[in-house]
Image (cartoon, rainbow, N blue to C red; front, side, top):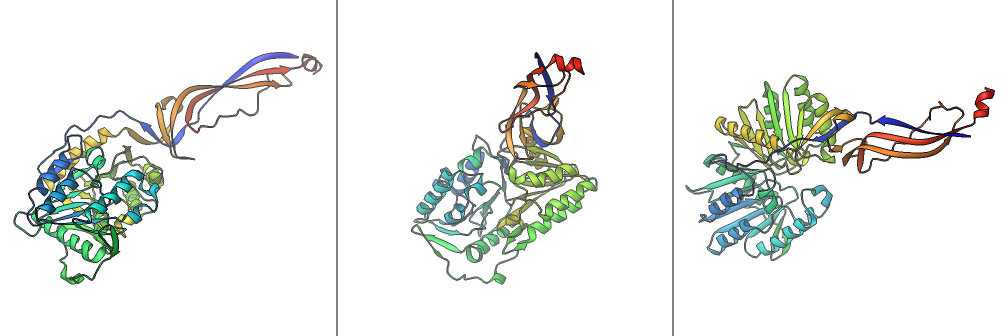
Length: 435
């Protein structure tokens, strides 16, 4: 018997539909104009909300899918103590606890804090809940000359207002009046439970009929399965001549908006998407990527915006999903030309902040230090340059006989650019001579 050390190097095949890391830089600016503020460590959203709540004299109307005890909620309680009426629309704790995995934006602790806060607030302000109440806004004295109001993409939680990619938009008087109409719809006709002294109970009859609440002129909504927001988004996408820039937390597979975006790409429209890398988003994003969209990722990307040809913008509370655009309680605000220019600048800063890029295919030599694979199984993995695998001793008939199979290792945590297989080849010299 003769033993000969042998080895073979195999290179990883190209990887398809994968998130790769990219250089990023933080967004330093928070206040971009008097109307537009983005989330950040300087707490500019907090400061804007609290200072306005502190000026309230009559009523405060708040809507947030989830809410946490913060300096903002402290300001609401202070307002109540000085005689201001405060109302809150939010999701019920029962709904939030149905499936924490569906709320990957939040930990179990945040949901528990939401419940605890509602118990405290219900002793001081009127809280109504509903499973589909997802819009985020704050209205201060909406029926007076000194009315103020804000639409937010973020929920009223600490990290959302300081660490997420979020935006606050200050409303004009027409928008405040229109959003107050949506609040009335939500409070009297959409909410199905009222929280009093820590106990949920069915809401009473509404003093308003549907016809008595004005239809908005300057905002677009999803309310009672009225899909005005979705229809406006579809028209926006159809009217694009060159470019569409979109940011959102989630994109639901098979939603009609996704198909519309695919078609627009095929018609030559340049589409850039900012979102979070996630398994939920993968199928929709892969369709858009295959069609030709440019897609960038950031784990805390939560703002929902659309910009068309750098001329018209939309800031909204809804994701691209049926729960938001078909069944939810959501709001969208149009930005004017000046505001859209600012929104375009913010979008560019957010794009630079993204630390992931979604790519159709990447060669082994171009793999970054870390990737997120979406197929065959979604997962974040470190990239290792070379992995050595010892096969052991293998009996062969001839010295030059090649092995038929090389056992590629499981890539549960790592991805390998190359694998070097080492083995000892044993063969019989006598058999070779007889041949």
